[in-house]
Amino acid sequence: MTRIEIDVIPYFDDNFSYLIHQSGSSGATALVDCGDAGPVLSFLENNNINLNYILATHSHYDHAGDISSLVNQFPNATVIKPKGEKRIDVAGKEVSDGETIPFGDLIIEVLAVPAHTNYCLSYKIEDCIFVGDALFSAGCGRMFEGQPADLERAMDKLSSLPGKTKVYFGHEYTKANLKFALSIEPDNQKTKDYMTEVEEKVKSGMFSTPSTIALEKEINPFFRIDQDSVIKSIDPSKSLSRTERMAALRHRKDNF
Ligand SMILES: [Fe+2]
Image (cartoon, rainbow, N blue to C red; front, side, top):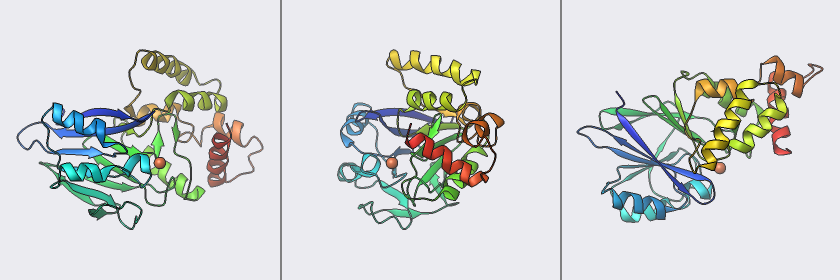
């Protein structure tokens, strides 16, 4: 039985906020990321929902830029943000890798996955993980601040989660990512099939979020760095280390 429910609240061109609420007596609620409070406040008001937590995955304006507007409306909500990240200019509780946050009678686990920025966090609750821009379906966030070894560590950490884990990512980039994935693995039938599925979903106004860790292991080249098909595309002469291969794959995506 699912003990939490998740609502997707889209904003800007392709961003997602996620509202997590616990079913049952506690009724605990948490919102993941907020670049535009407008749609979130409408949703909360329409559904008569209070806010207990605001979870910030990273500092970028389209994820954390309008948290202050939420705090104005819900002054009792606790903002949770990455420890040491000075660019999220809202008072709150700073957390780091391995910490837990009580959520009703459940807990939210904090996983540090720096690479996109030096302070990226993912939040895991039950079999759901909220990754911001650390991971996308069929891709990952641009390596703005971290080093290739950071990206490698982040991908290894996320891909080692149980396959059934649902992945709630920060942007609807899936179609473009699948196009890139097919340029790396043109014979990956699962990727081809998933492209068809996502195209149909997006055409009918649906979102591709969430994915699962199991699906990403089949389609996401950043999770498939050790597959022969990916090595063949990225490093046919097999001269690169694994970390260098990850860097080369990210570089290829940046220029795709
Ligand atoms: Fe970002």
